[in-house]
Image (cartoon, rainbow, N blue to C red):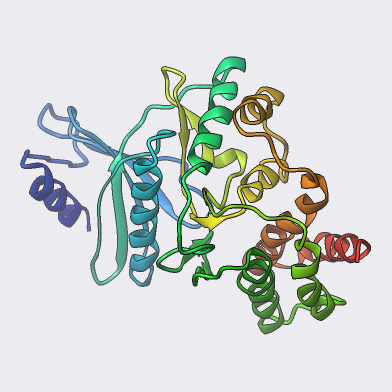
Length: 297
């Protein structure tokens, strides 16, 4: 695998890249780093060039291909920095993705403000086909459906909440009133008319970072074109971002009236997904959120 990765880098860059486990002056190295809960991740270097590599099972090649395409879509919005993907590939055992290595630093009051501004700018990128994307991708390790639809309410009911409920039922999960929930989502969102915005799709604190120079960076996207509020809602799910992030966002593109009522519904998608990924610990939280949403019907 590592030989193939070295060769792939050399082929694409036209520069020699030699990585080994020794300590001599001709040898580089690989170091395990944080890369999320579903992948192995490494910083690899030959002493001069540096790259970030994620590994998973060979069957996950399409997941990495979708991630590359998503990073490119975000980069093309010319709004906020994302790691530049170099390539992806597979062998008999592993699939991999190689991208630029960005030494990370820490966010400060002003840099969080700038991240909010730049996210709002990214959300300005829209799509004439409506809500969805030209391909499916993944949210964590779960398939994420992205067939184009004109109605945001129908899209979120069918391809977000409805699909997650189906997956939960397959694994033996049971939640009360899910049929009523899915049926009523278009009604709950009927008075809300978002434009299709390019969204990150998985924007929790672990996917928001800063370079050592303080430049905001977004990582590990699960992009599609949807209501921009889904990104803002998720930033509050596992501990909110600093206040200045929201100030920067609101100054650039204020949220629509009623966002607080939609926030729980949008975050329910991620809690159902966590139930499907990690098990029953999220079941009661999901049920509480379902009940809370239906109380508004």
